[in-house]
Amino acid sequence: MPGTGHIAPIRAVWELAQPWYGDRLDADFTPHTREHNQLLLENCGFTGEFWRLP
Image 1 (cartoon, helix red, strand yellow):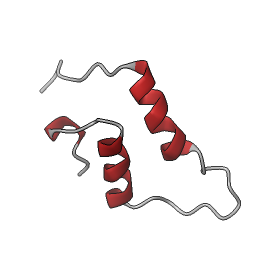
Image 2 (cartoon, rainbow, N blue to C red):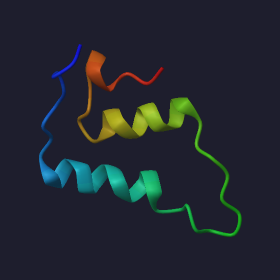
Image 3 (spheres, rainbow, N blue to C red):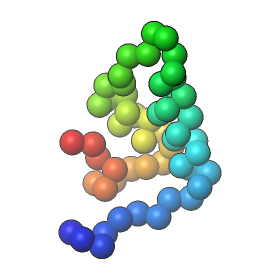
Image 4 (cartoon, helix red, strand yellow):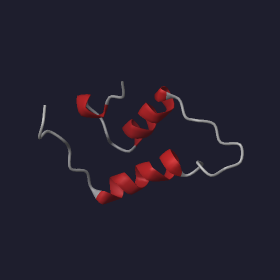
């Protein structure tokens, strides 16, 4: 639905960004699985239908 979204505290976004993007430049980087990323979201407090990955 247009206009719907979520405003997140900057600290929560920062805590999510570290594990989400922190290893992207590593020589042995492999993409994270959907399950891994979903767990990262949940561990940082991003829960509920809005944050469920497809």
